Length: 297
Ligand code: FE
Ligand code: FE
Image 1 (tube, rainbow, N blue to C red):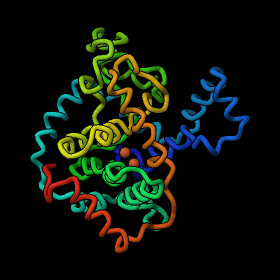
Image 2: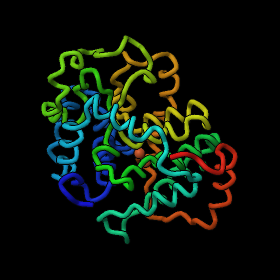
Image 3: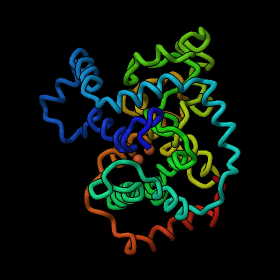
């Protein structure tokens, strides 16, 4: 899928970049933690991630920031959220997502299903609630948007609110200069089209796999799981603490779970492939506990 609209070799290239930018806290030396606490050093480190990014990652962010306008998201919601593309159960959707092949090396890279099972299994090992394990298992199912022919920059990428000013903390902020919304005065104030603490449910986010999956599963999971799914790529908020002025009391409560989920998503990739036959009965039962046999996608 490597063409001018899809600069990444695979979706993992974006995730690898996230890991460089947000290293696992426990593995940082105390010196590094000290550096991170110094705002000037922090800013410098932040720019360094951008300089060190691969050209493909840079190009990916350029496209994402250029084309993710308020109107673009509205159009995609209309196009996809009637959920009339497919009817399938959760396991069927996992298998469907797993047909997503990209140019990355199949011998060394994990499949989408491997990533989802590794995430869920670590959550399970830590004794988290069953809905948490289930959210881990399905959180990236929205990436089937790629199989509908959507470009990478409209499926993955750190998400951010549209219709108000972009946080300075969003990576490759300079690429927003080419976004037509930068010339819409109404979208360029701190609050933009929103009210102070209006709640994220009233905020339109840049379009991608998080938002799509949320709408597919919103009737079936507890609010904690839904927040984890809907905002797991909202790095400017859950890792950088931005946009709190748009959150209401419930969002602040739920974001504890979004933050609890992030390390499982980002740091549990290992080369040990999960054993499907062994794991399948547990997950079949877990899926049955929350979901009907078939869902609208
Ligand atoms: Fe994701
Ligand atoms: Fe993920």
